[in-house]
Length: 263
View (cartoon, rainbow, N blue to C red):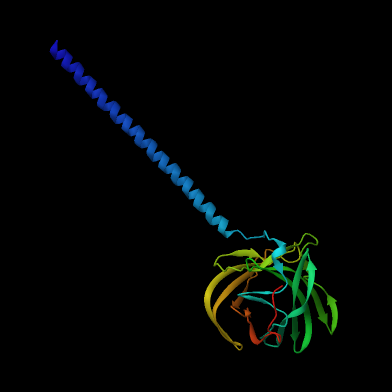
């Protein structure tokens, strides 16, 4: 009888060990499965976060009451009388902040004239419209009027657009805070102009006939309207654009009245 009891107890203990082993295996299996699932979720979140960073900004939540036609961003000067001249071969571009403003999309904007000449003859004149946020120092682009010339006469207005008309919206020309990898639309005029920019380098030193500039930034410009096209521009603090592909800055002219105040 005692022998039978011992055998029964031995069998029970053996079964208990088997059940304990199965229980541990189930728990471990669940833990591993949970870890794998958690890993999957984590991977998804990281991927999502990465994608979000790569999205082009195309909506800008701005209080228009803070926008002014005159001001200065570290990499963009919007003060009447300020002038930059560029040269590439026989092409010359003169960029001048005019002593005039215009109201576009309920915002008073400053005007920059770009005059392009080849061998001394004008072939295009644009008036670009900008406003600067007094809180963030962001510079917004509200559109452009374009006059294309041939033999001294205006023959077209290709590329013209203004915010608030035909579905066009203002874009960001230059952020007040520079971050490598920042991607944003400069122009939002469907079927007309959809230029966008990405800040790709900072801390550069660039030399042009106008001087040696430090702490420059490099911007890559593209457009979904021409997927293969890429342009590169360099900006210097306290100056503005100093290089546009092979077009280089050759002269800087400060406003004659240096006491131009922001409005």
